[in-house]
Image (cartoon, rainbow, N blue to C red; front, side):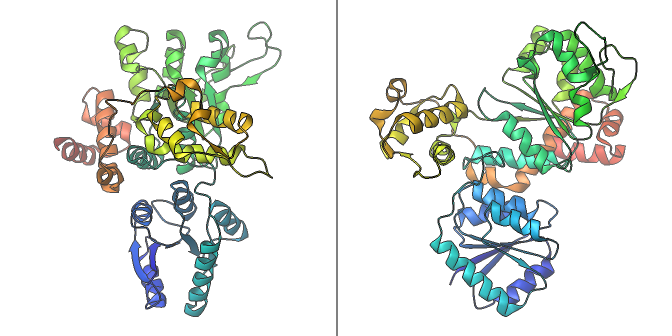
Amino acid sequence: MQRALIIDDTPSLISEIRHMLKGEYAITSARSPIRGIRRAISEEIGLVITTLKMREMGGLDVIRRLRSRGYQGCIVMVTAFGDASTAQEAIRLGATDYITRPLVAAELISRLARALKKTDSDSIPPLQSIEEDICTQDPEMIALLELAHLAANTDSRILILGETGTGKELLAKAIHRYSQRVKKPFIAINCAAIQESLLESELFGHEQGAFTGALSRRIGRFEQAGTGTLFLDEIGEISLALQSKLLRVLQDGEYYRVGGNQKLKSRARIVAATNQTLRQRVESGDFRADLFYRLNVVSLKLPPLRQRPGDVSLLANFFFQRFKSDTSIAKRFSERALEQLKRYNWPGNIRELEHLVERSNILIRKHVIELEDLPQHIQQAPQKTNVPLGLNVETALNFSDAKTRFEKTYFNNILEQSGGNYALAARMAGMERTVFYRKAKKLLAN
């Protein structure tokens, strides 16, 4: 009997669907979307039925994350809240069918049978778009994404750490999509790519005549972001002088345009990123400690690609799909080539792999790219040693553990910022002092 998984947080709807499908499928259910995603993949369930609106994660995100992790089964969305545009979006993300409520047992059984038949005859791409979700099957990355999802639903500032090319901006965009600010602007600025003399104007804007060449008023990135998300990439590159001005915005939410005297307010959510070790820069005096603690409320560290060998083939196949022409068949690496790619150290991380695939797609005319076709420095790459094994799979995928880890990090950081003052820390967290104290003691005692 075909196994089916219902993902919804409403017991009455789960019971209704179970009753309608009794005898047709072996039904299981998950009231947590994240746990449901894990089960669908790990237990190789052939049919997933999800709803649109859930507290932890919406149904569209469930579809996106299932497909991004390579789930090849049938996904059917059941909802009373959607419209034609929602249905189109669900299908675009990888749903096989979209059924509106109220449900009729005979119609539901018939539609599910057709959807399963269609899934069997179609080749479902494992990923819809790397721009919409992060491509991974690595346990450590999955755990990090679960923490990112939890952090996204708060207003806490997030600091993303990772080597160049690991996907820091991609993660920042995912955090924005997971947050309640998703319909607001996402504004990104690379602090290392702009001259120091111009960076202040880029961030805060300037008034006409503020400096030579300022022919008109310019709106800065803080103002552009509004109540959305401002992503400050390579935050470790900014000067000490500009750090103090940025600190004022983070402390008071106030700033001035360059050359202006009108006080402006910022309500943007700050997500920062760096490939540097900011704690070392704080110790050396190159980065302000107070700014570091303001930014580092929640930190997320992206592992380099060399620690994610299982993602190499997943990413390579996606990039080959991206670069193929409309009339051609996507190329692929042979098994021998893939094994060597997994041994390679990837100093440029995912960006380097993307460039390798693009180059191979252009210059190599064969459909299957062999080991001998790879660049010499990759062919000669030695076997990696001392590569961290990452998190235990069960630990990485346990939502409760992920939530506890996030809360411990949050309470530790906010107490560090307040100098151990529980009353101040509670005000910073927007919580009653007694509630904050009990929660902090319980979490930090373990």
